[in-house]
Length: 281
Image (cartoon, rainbow, N blue to C red):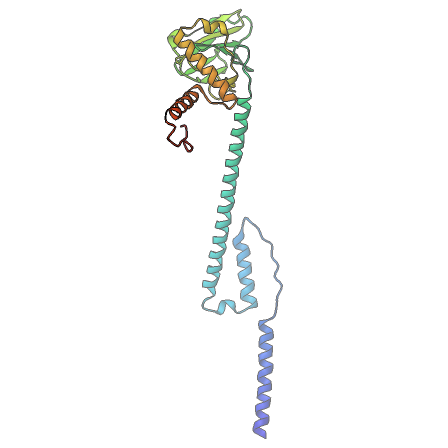
């Protein structure tokens, strides 16, 4: 009986000790510290000191490895979140840029030419024919030609007054013939420039690239000027004007109409053939 009694007492003692140990292990402690984003190491040091003082975590041989593993996992998460955020910002930037370009294109397409088939801008105005572009730049009354700068090159135009920022300075919409261009001061208040187009079959959308563009489909050439052209040029211009009108109405061009006529003729000559899947390209 004494042995049993001793065993029971020892068992009760062990149970009490075990309960005390378990209670110690499950004991909670409050931690309070201020986090300074400019000095995160100080905060981590306080956390590690607190853990070391209130638990036996750092007595384990794998403690350092576990901390390093948690740090690496946090770094991976932050890197992934940063990359995702950056990708979203890039996509948003692309969408914004596309929206701006789309809006710019819509605005450009809606600009109706002035009576000279050009445009009146804040710093200058311009007009055009198929052969030439006329640019008018207002300057202070009394301006002499010696005070003006007009540098005309094949693909570049620079206009302004000496000692002042250029009024026009940029790449031309299309190339010109510099030897056939000239400028002068008119009424002592306007720099007048005549540019002779190198390609005299196209309408310009602007004088200098980057400036507002007109809708060339709304250009209205003077009939009297068409009559002055030689037959071949006149036919080309009339064809171009017809194609522009057709395009604005969503209708086929002359070239497409010609191909349709050729196909119809071929179909009539070969009724035995199946043209149900024929496509015009």
